[in-house]
Image (cartoon, rainbow, N blue to C red; front, side):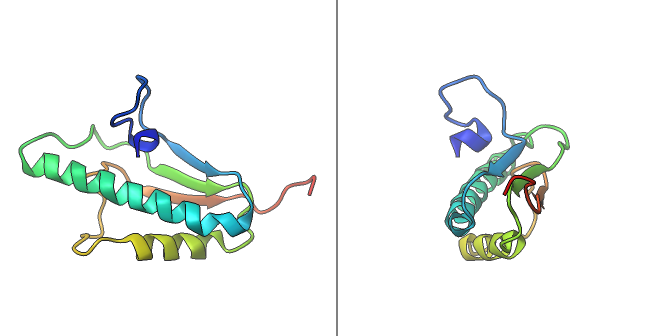
Length: 113
């Protein structure tokens, strides 16, 4: 979570703009589930801040890009499964607490494979 949101991170870095999976396809689902759980937790904390009278996390920002270097193995399906499995009860379907939309992308193939 700290690597995505900078909350509790030991450095002065900013929020992540791109989450890039550079791993074998068999690892995508497990990694996507961890990303989904972290994003749901960050979103819930952001919504709690707003409900307590705090500000939304910055102005409307560009979407958070989540992608894979090799997406031919069903990356889009695995993303849907991961976010559905990790979705907390009562999630409204919007990412107000995160302050940005999510966008999936994937590269089809590499010329050197």
